[in-house]
Image (cartoon, rainbow, N blue to C red; front, top):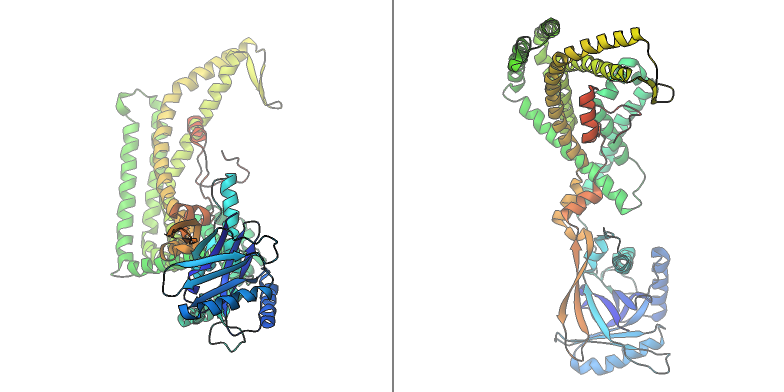
Length: 574
């Protein structure tokens, strides 16, 4: 059986000593973690390893000896290192030696307690101890048995190095009786700037989040949001939904509970970076709006645009009241519907001109909300579009209700002709006998509704297209908001700057292959792809729009059912 020895590349120039690590018997592998140098007392080494094992819950032991000496002292040192196997009872005893300045290494094993001692074939695998310790190995996306088995083997190696972090906290400058060589033996890696930012940012973020959450708790305790107008607005306006979503994020990052797993830590980090970038973009937008009086120019442009839209709607209604596309409509119904909608446009124009003196002031205060984040500003823009196109929504509702009434009336009368009716209790169509008067009235009503249907359907079609245009614009805005909310920016930046932190697997490169010498391989980390990073660490978002299928949407449009820009409670989604 082949023996695999995972050797840290940082220890290749270490002085001679003994190898400390973990033995994986099910894989016939040895994971070397550090080299203990001379001089040392074996009892102190065993005591130190037992303390580390008690803290890390990883079974550590002395696995063998390491020789890095010159040619003239090699014979005496190799004999001494071989005798150390009688003190540290581990089998097999691994002996690795570096032949002076040569690139060739020798690696052998010794079965001390075996009647027939023999050497095994050894594969020496170098790994970057720092990268393996800081990386997180992700499970494979496929569920193949062989892939899962290989992943479990790799996870055992990554787990061993990551759990032995306390072993790497000692360096050569410590006054302890044991001197180790590992990736931090020259000094513990740290950044003064990062540590100062941690000490300063945590209290500041906690205080800010506590103030905002206490205000929210005060509002909820006194039941301000339970009153009808506020509760309705909070559930329907996308700005309120986004504020509630961000408050949930603040609760997550301000929690004093430490992240227990890598997934929880990455979720907190992604939420924090998303909030930070969102607020930064919002402040940039706010500074752009308040520079060079852009708020005033926007307010001066808004009223003419609203008047232009109203004029276009009036021209469209005048066209529908005539002979649109050469179609012959029911003139009486056409005139009634046209004048009804023209009156609503007149009311809407009067309302806009009544609000015109206050629009600049409203936009000035609305612009300040951009400091809460770009997503809040986009949600406010979506709500403003909904308010400015409220008359289009009203036209759509009127046309849809009238069209739906005629469609259901025609379907009910069609069942009357066939001698059937809809059974409300059993929710099915049953047979029924009608007398002559009922059939006469049904025929008369069916004829009236059928000949009035084209006129109603034309108005419904036009206003439905206008309504769908507004919904598409709002949908694009909400797609952008969902993208900012759900994009794992911290994970993407981590993949870009330190790709080894997000490991999908490993690959091996052959360094040396020669007869009589152990095969030397270099283990390198394969990072996750950007698509896998987004799929794994994508943040959940609130869905403001119903997720209807295309079949359900077409059915609603054909039957005249209303398409709301929000999801109803208890509504079954396809």
